[in-house]
Image 1 (tube, rainbow, N blue to C red):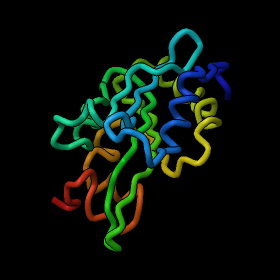
Image 2 (tube, rainbow, N blue to C red):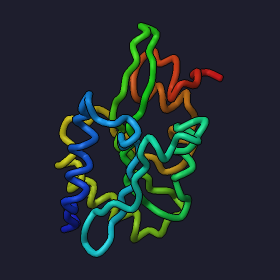
Image 3 (cartoon, rainbow, N blue to C red):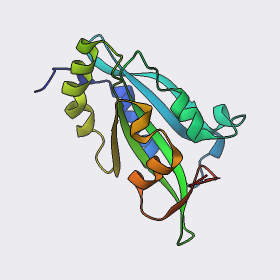
Length: 161
């Protein structure tokens, strides 16, 4: 079921920016997290967190979890950095639909029915998670298991601790 909600052009630009990180780009300007909301018939940017905005954060994964409001549905785009047993460092985009059980039913239905609109502009993004509660993927272990096999660190912090 389509909702008729459209994706704002700014969202499309940000997604393209996040998918293609240029090697000569300023690392501090790199977009790491984007919160998207449905407003006035469009999926719009609610907030953007760049590398420089997160420089004081000890754990970006925990910061990501702190953005999940128990009363509001949102879409999030997370540039997740992790390491695997094969010792390769990876940076991959994760799309999250956050629809907590405690959010209004109308909001949950709107986000669920609008997901196809945003997915059309998310081509090339490897990971998609639907979270309704922090028990879904709210621990580093669960999240790591969902995004890749043999993950040993997420955002520089060990998995399994």
